[in-house]
Length: 106
Image (tube, rainbow, N blue to C red; front, top):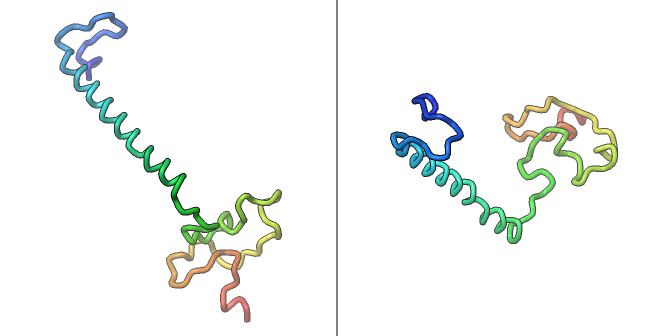
C-alpha cells in the first residue's frame, strides 16, 4: 500500500505522511512473530512428554504406511501384494491395501 501511494524505498528517513502505515506494518509484523512463536512451547512439551506415535497413527490405507520405520533398504522386507484400491477408507471396516480382504481369501 505504501509503495502504491508513492513512498520511496531505501531512504534514511521516510516522509511523515507514511508514519501511520509504518506503525500498522510494525504492529502486524509483531503479531505475526508472536503467532509463529506461540506453538514452540507445545512443540518442546510434546517432544519431551508426548506419547510416541505408532507405525500407522491415522490408520491410512496406502502402502507407504505398511513399511516399518525406519524402512528397510528396499522399503519393504517382502514385496507387498496389492489386493484392492487405495482409497477404500470411506467404506465401513476398511483395511490397508496390502491386507487380504475377506472375499479375497476364499
